[in-house]
Length: 319
Image (cartoon, rainbow, N blue to C red; front, side, top):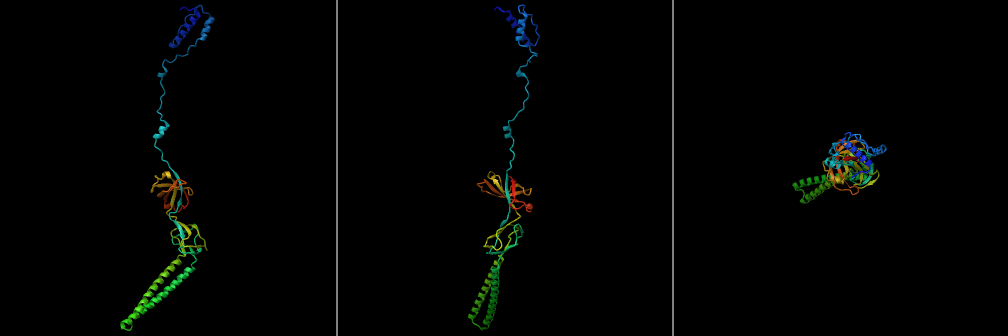
């Protein structure tokens, strides 16, 4: 093939030389330009060609270049699955209750004549708390006592008559009929005296029942009746609470009903005192309240804190 334009041939040769120099990194001497190519045309072709690189490219292919070292990264999801689960604590609330509490009431009816103790006062077992009007009870007691004295005199007289009649029977100075009659009178006098003794004991009990005594050591939590008020048998006058053997009642979510067992020890926090304590679970009430979805756990608080903890105080526990 014959190239008709010598300028094209010169430009092609120039480009090949430049490309060979870029690949080998060696300096190549360019041949002299053809005499037909003018200076202006050669300059324009040189400007149009790509510039020579300033530095030789690396002969190592990209795949062979060293790569930075990478660490074995465990995904967060798999890492969380391999680590042991942390123990979770459930905070519950409750209150302190008296292990022994009850209502104090009279065993007989009447009007309250006097209340001796006040709310919040500590009482001892057997201490008198209140009195009923004992006018009628005292009259019945006095009457029963007099009847017993009379029955005793009757018995003593019948016993003497029996002794004398027996002596006369031995001497033959009386009949068998008289002896039997006096013997029957003695038996009736004996029964009468025994009945009088029972009546006196009953009257004495009724008189004592006009006094309301504490059944155990504790504190007066409430007063339900006032002086002058009529109360029936068994009507509550005071509420007493023992300050010993304190218990704590906790409301626990039903999800823990299979995990909480009697004998477990739980940590307590008493915010009002700023103190901590421990309670041993005594019993569990397996009844779920519908509104709160909780059940009751009852524990025993140590007696060492009985002087500080008050029944009804708010407590928190961790299970």
